[in-house]
Structures are given as C-alpha cells and as structure tokens.
Image (cartoon, rainbow, N blue to C red; front, top):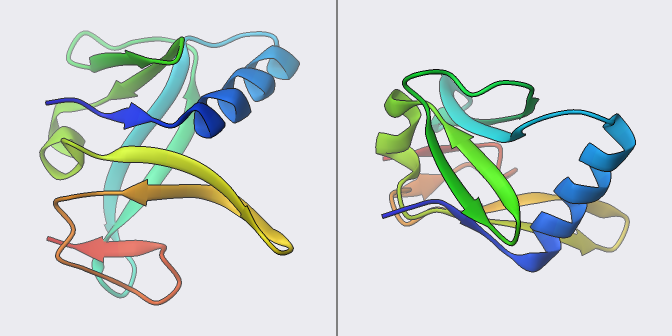
Length: 107
C-alpha cells in the first residue's frame, strides 16, 4: 500500500516548503505518546534516509521510516479548516481507537 494525501494537504505542504526555501518533502511518523498509545509526528525533511520509504502524491514526497509505516500504511493525510481551527487530519485505517482531541491513536 502507500500513504496518500488530499489536494488540500498537498497545497498546504507545497506552500510551506516554498516559503521555507528547501526540503525534500514531508516526513510522517509515529511515536509512543498520548492517551491512546501512539501520536502522529509531522516535520519537513531535508534528506531521505537509506531505510526511508518515499511515496509521492499530488507532487509532494511523503517520507516514512519503516517502523512508522507499519502503523501508517494506507493512511490518507488531509488538511482542513473547521471554524477557527485548522490542521492536518489523519484518515488511518489501522487506528482502532483515537483520543478525543485527535492527537493520538491506538492499534
């Protein structure tokens, strides 16, 4: 499978990277944290590691380490604005539960 993103998410990443002036793509990962067990991690990557998996969607590279890919395979990354709030949303088919704030999930 792969990790994908919506056009809205890709637009946001492309704009941010253009303002930033450098970068290979968006690094997506997970770490143990939060009330549900795992938390999503997003950062802009300046390099691709030798073990990283790279997916490209809407012209944006999505970079994932092998340990995170187990939890993220099949995930779609979206970017949404709801009222005064805006941010990335993860549509993760592997998540069996999530905390109320959407910051963490369990498998």
